[in-house]
Image 1 (cartoon, rainbow, N blue to C red):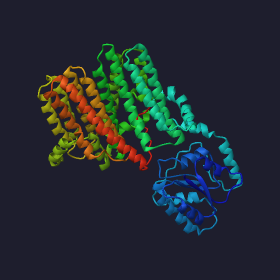
Image 2 (cartoon, rainbow, N blue to C red):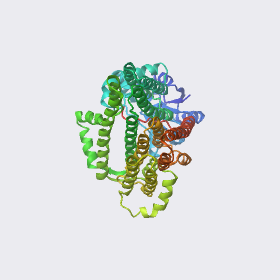
Image 3 (cartoon, rainbow, N blue to C red):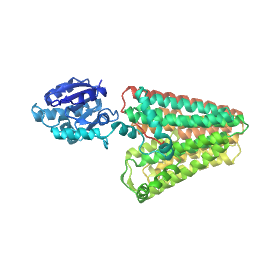
Image 4 (cartoon, helix red, strand yellow):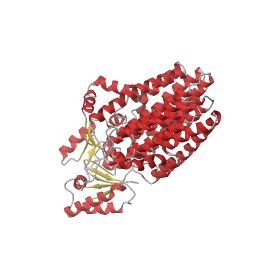
Length: 604
């Protein structure tokens, strides 16, 4: 149980002790800094501890934001400071300094605020939550106390808490059609002790049932699938709002939320394809194309963000224009809708599923995602070309991990390491694009079973090595990972389609889904500052160039029916390896008490 140390002279009628107990704290009182230091030393090192001024006046939610958020080792609001185990040493040092300076005398001013000042002087990173209209203060006289209490009574902190549960930057559909009621569902869940992870799991199960309904191929099944998909999205919004409402953030929860979103969407694609097949329409190529396009869009987002989030001198006229457009009301919503975020995308899929056919649904999805991808990628290219930025070694390392280079590409990278230094800055994305286009085009334009795709895949391994031979710090080097993803996924799609045999495209769908999971897992490890997946895992599944080469070799050496079986085996093998390692990692990180995160991810 966390411990709160109340310092200073108690105030008759104050609710601070009861408020702290309602937040789960064991409350102890200290009359001076020396006693506070003694009580702090007695708290087990693995528990959260807070130092709170007994004169504190404020909203309960202000205390909750300042003292219970699991994401920050150190946090403070006026009159209160807290430390998790990772911040205990800094807090102990700051309190010892104040005890020495104060000589153990009875407190006159706020010890908690003096500790925060000392922490700042030490260079500690103290989180101060945005309180907005919430009150948090330490009055020094009865008149100030009375005014503070009046200010508390004038603001409904529950209304503020509900409002803050909604993500700051949501899409149009989510903002106006989901959040007005999902926030109350989040509060209902909180009051019944449900956790965000439980709601996330419920959202996944609902989406899987929706996929099963779509797989029936009946009009009733399609209508039910559309309704359940919207319900799944409501629950998807609710889990994040519940996490923000109750401050239940966790490393495991962020991973589940992010990966389950992808699993739900792609499982639904598979259900639609199965339903279409029951009606005599083979749309597996469209389903796989939609998954490839959507995954590559996400990789563009991830790569661009990783390349620029800690860049220095990070200015751009294009970015300035974008910020000005965001200051005009209608352009904000237009720009959020044009990128087809998850809310708009799922609403479109649900409506089209219920009212039309799977083929029309996938065609509309492909067109919408292609336009959104063109818009966002063009804007990011313009920003990169006009941006004066120096990218860090960390950013270059993250892009190299996102590239997912296997032994072949790494070997060629070692060969090209010195020559690559003399090449122009645009070399990396250019050779990645050309090598990827060559292998996909060769697979599409030559007869299935011919040797040329293998030759192109070998050339692609060479160009991939050249692309990553030097640190990816160029203006457009963030394009390298999405180009490599498109080449790998596109090759599997084209060869499966060219096989023209039942089972090849579903097998390719499974393979791309397994590999995409690995790539999403890599992203969320990097975002959580947990590092990329271990090198043995990348080597075990071949890297992007190894898998591309393996698929082309299978297409050359096997008959079409055998190729479909081999793709299935490869998909199962990759899925088992990456899932077992991913689950092991995230569960162990959660048990080890890894810093809690809450990844807002794709705008809902």
